[in-house]
Image (cartoon, rainbow, N blue to C red; front, top):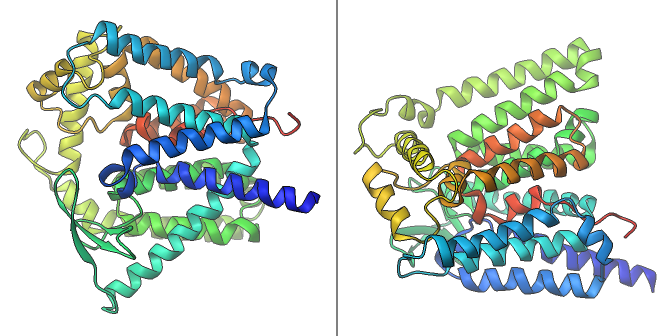
Length: 398
């Protein structure tokens, strides 16, 4: 009987982590079934919470509880009272709250170790399937189907229209709508496994899976993903005890890492970005777009530092248009520009507290900065995986 209960609990947790992944910038989420996935995440999280009945005291003592409540309250105050001139699409506040609370209910209902293990396993399985299809496509054994997106654009899709190829078919997106969204999931997973790679880099249980994620990261050809990967490798090299004691292991990893960095730097993706027409507001290169996004959002923050320009507001859209903020690509600055600096300070304090509990085996301030750095390359307030890494978890004995 006990075995059946454990198996059922494992399956329930697996479904929860899968919903978190699907609600984190996948093609299905952004261009096909966003509202359905948001409600599925929320109600399934609520189901787990009600079924497992965590103690009220443990919920209140949860290190992210106060932030979740305050953040939700501020979203609606900002939307209904402060920045009330909304554009026609008024689903964003609901989407933000559904994703946040659905993920929060899930983290209150499972322990951190279970989430972390399932996250690596599921992400690895998705990557293996994607890598296989990627290879089959490039050797000409399968062909993609062209599908029109719900918000415009044409996508090249494989495997029942759920695996996406990059815009030039040479960049791997897997389930995600673009390579940079894919690298967010890979970066967050690798980020959580830094302690394991520091303490036991060559553990057979995780080493092969980590290599699969790194290969997928390389094939995503995402510049931000490359930067994050290089930083993670440097942290491991500087903190791993085996590498400190064994010169051979250190030299071997150094050669492998250096070769990887040289390959990345010499790739056409990086070289094309280095040749972009920087300073030209009309240029379409991704780094150039991000540059003007960042400058525009910094200006917007300076204009409304306390309350921001809101979400789904005409003020935000019009000011972005005036300042050439095309995509709000920096998640940290987008949060500040939307809701103001006070909520961002509260966010940073909560990140510091929750990451400290996760014991990442290196300086907690550095861990907090690395987490924020990863969020400078995505819309963090809309990605469930970011909230899943950010939030505190149920204690194993509660």
